[in-house]
Image (cartoon, rainbow, N blue to C red):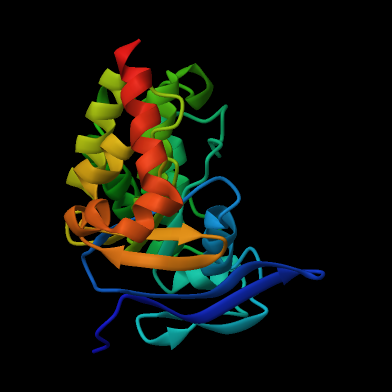
Length: 258
């Protein structure tokens, strides 16, 4: 069994002559929760796109459970056990909470393209959808169309869809963006609960969320990982403070005072 759930080895990505990711390396162990932080334009979303297969890397290796995945299509990577949510909710808005979750589990349970089968008879898919719905605390909203959920509920449903297929490596892109403080606090607890035993990578700008959720923090600056360590050590890292963290924490303290 491989030592790392996810590994990046000197990954680079250029768009034309512009190099966005400049030799990023990262080793994430199974079950770790890792937050990726950095200034705007650091390449965080690009890195997520490379890992999830939306972009192909220019050079370097990306390994999922010891298997090279760079060059694979997003759906192929998903079937190998990696799932991703996006900054913008990506739901079937006219389907109910339950129907959205059931769609997410069908492939993982082997139904493939058997459209002639009655979904009501897909007992294992229905049970898994109900189970995930309980986990994300939307069971009381079971038959509500996704378009009629609150913003926080839509984000919860999206994370439910992300984990419904049983992926062991979860990528969350700014999961608490646009939420109030109380919503964010509840959502962080939800993420913590439903990712127990799974490997989590999240891009997040809220330092309260980062330090409250992550086991380790990867700091990305100008396409390079300049630090990867525990929250306490990253907070004390002088290079990180100079490049990013000091000004961000100061800005958030000022914002919190108003």
